Image 1 (cartoon, rainbow, N blue to C red):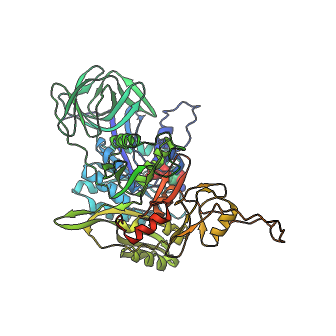
Image 2: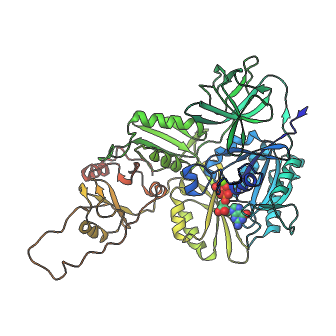
Image 3: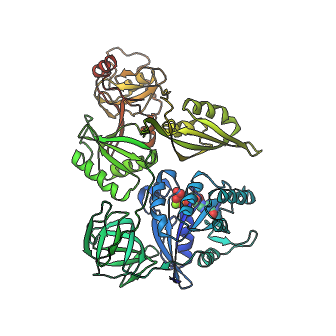
Length: 610
Ligand SMILES: Nc1nc2c(ncn2[C@@H]2O[C@H](COP(=O)(O)OP(=O)(O)OP(=O)(O)O)[C@@H](O)[C@H]2O)c(=O)[nH]1
Ligand SMILES: [Mg+2]
């Protein structure tokens, strides 16, 4: 067997925020892939606008550095559980992984998930204890917990033998022994050269697995992946082997490899390298590109199933078409189907209504990011409350169940356990570190997690952290009684005014500013009682000729509660929708008039499950 000693392929994996993208910054900057005067900033790989705003990685991306004559292909992955599909998609391109563990938080639920993925692919692991500069780091304990995790997950003895390094990605240093004074990231790069096996070369005709797709307005579709066998050059003829046995023949346009943030055009690439090729009209992630002489398919990439679903429909509000550029069913359908090409853990299904699609994803954030992306592109549509995906297995109804880990303080334990027991959660573990830092672990059906995050942040005043991990399907545990109060619903269309809003504030909290256009059936506030209340927020004060002593005192409104997109989706009930447009996020009742809603209560033919 031959090896490419001039290449290493590694994936960087970890729980969310443990510092993966910051570590890639350090590797890129110190290996001098930029010009000396080039301004590159921080979290360089988080290049997408939403990634920069939210400070999280959403999509896996490739880059590469040159070190001691070896090209290290690096894949940065997201750590948030909702984007786990991205890790599954790319991990097979690498031969080794850097598993980052925060020196304070230690291994977290997603650490276990990604390490399990890496081990099942047989990758060589290097553990990097990151953020060693943090004051309250507890390195010895974090190492012990990481070793426990390896013991639990390893499938063979040699997987237990991992290399350990210590780093501060933010300061750009790594050391092999604790207590050593670090000065650069090179000990980590040396460790990669030494410990990650170089890619094997299999001889034979060309074969490559497509792990990612990109698009260029001049070059068309770009397929990215690792070459497993043979060589590829421009103008080679290849076959693309699709999911259902389809075979299409094309001529390769150009071939690129990565260096830093650039794609470099090359004349030939060989097994072991990660490349991007153009010239293929029809190609999907998971397809094999192979030499036309011997078109053999590689195993397709397997991605876990989605757990949450919600409907995306054409905007049916009276304001429909006012702000969006793309508002029709045809636009919505085409956009959702385009998303399926790269967003592998997403599913889209038709429903009974031709204007509505059922969209399934890995979690609320996974779907919320898609909604936000589409709204910025100029789409206008309406979405329903998310619901957990249930299935029938052997004649029994089953539902997804997740492990929920909460890090909190003693004072919040009571309120959290009470909130969670109403959501059918079962406490499975509770640990106190002796300094009032408490870790709670629950098993909870996915349906009980919907809308929980915002309630959790309010209840713990933003002082605690929660994480979830999908466990599997279990027997359906019955309905959850919703605890949300009811809403204030606009009874008349028009423009909201201070007088009308002030009256509404006598009944509850309001969601809009004076001057906001409203329609009948739009949700303009909430209150604690059981029944929705119609309010006329457009009502002006009657004009009279008599001057009263108080009429000149300006009414002072309480500032409105403004929901983010995620909070809005969390908030709505099954008889409500979120209307999403490039300029606004509005909440509404599905049935807009009071009369329709009354009729529905009297004969609830359209009632939906809660
Ligand atoms: N103190 C300290 N903070 C760090 C270090 N490395 C990263 N951070 C901070 O941790 C936060 C998260 O860093 P990222 O690099 O975005 O983490 P990530 O693992 O890429 O996060 P996701 O991709 O969203 O999973 C940022 O605020 C970083 O500045 C470190 O070595 N020390
Ligand atoms: Mg990141």
